[in-house]
Length: 244
Image (cartoon, rainbow, N blue to C red):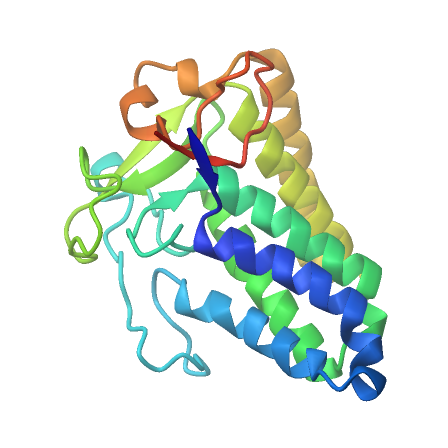
């Protein structure tokens, strides 16, 4: 069994590492600030949904505009997991948590323009995550074409199905992402920060009430596994991409 990270999750760890080294940029001979800028820029290439006018990755176009249609729900937005055009809620939520904590810990050391870009990257994810937890009895944990979770290059404009579950793990990681992002936006956008915190509390309460591994839900197991499953029995958050 091998373990690989989705592309945008690897970029998140790169952002965290580069923030630690950016202060050494002038003395080490390596331009860590430029590397940090490119690491944050990477997320724009993974965007799904209606793209803004200031989109810097010009090759990326609008995509996934009918996501959630089969449930009469708006699931547009968020990030693709990799080149497979699937939106997995679990690793996206973890990525958002890490990005938010990077801003909380190192935001004061970031150039103003890159701090703005980092906050925009966080909000692109949290706007989507808010949609996934908007319904009181379920959470949307994955968006893809049914039965084609890992088929690279499938048409992003086809009707794509949202996969739901009513349990523990994904809700907890989403709660962590929303609460961390709430702290990141507290000074720059207090209203949005309050919205994130309120929804984080609701997501946590729901997860605490309905415990169990989300990948055990028969409605989503075939699509979530073997990519983001509870293999070890802890029934907690798992961020590895498991492949045999």
